Length: 231
Image 1 (cartoon, rainbow, N blue to C red):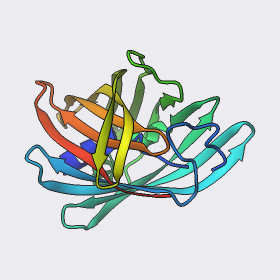
Image 2: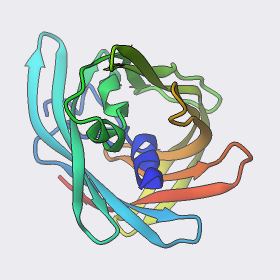
Image 3: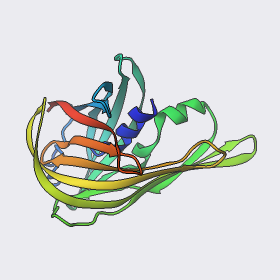
């Protein structure tokens, strides 16, 4: 289950949302778009699936805002708790709500506990070039447990444009930019902590079509492939 959630976080840039092919180069901002990624472990066995649905699109001044719904499924097809978040397109940059980085499995385990969320959005500009460095993103969740504050954070750093490649998946063949990043999850109270790196293949008009996840030693831990795209 942890691997499913990890791949989901790594591929969270896979969004869609209307008006604005003019605003967003890489993501079709249009209601009803559905991107489906199937997740695999290091041996190539299916671990689950994640779907990104563009539920609603609205305009606020010069910005276009998409409400996204993430649906997560285990390897047996059972739907797990998903998330809802916003993506904003303005000035040639798509900005994804930092709440999309929340580990829904962990939050579900804490039930109705009070918590506060803060962070920095995940941005992807239209103008990408090899060697380009992208902004960091972060989410920090502070929970109150029996009068004691417990803090968990997910920090995404070292975001760079590595190369361009063509990728073939069950959904088609795509010309992609290859992005790299480091994701570090920290928590207090002995609840765990981990650091990993990943690659993402991002295609114009589609979003993420492939991700590969590596542990801190550089060993492949899992991957996700775009298996369906409906616009």
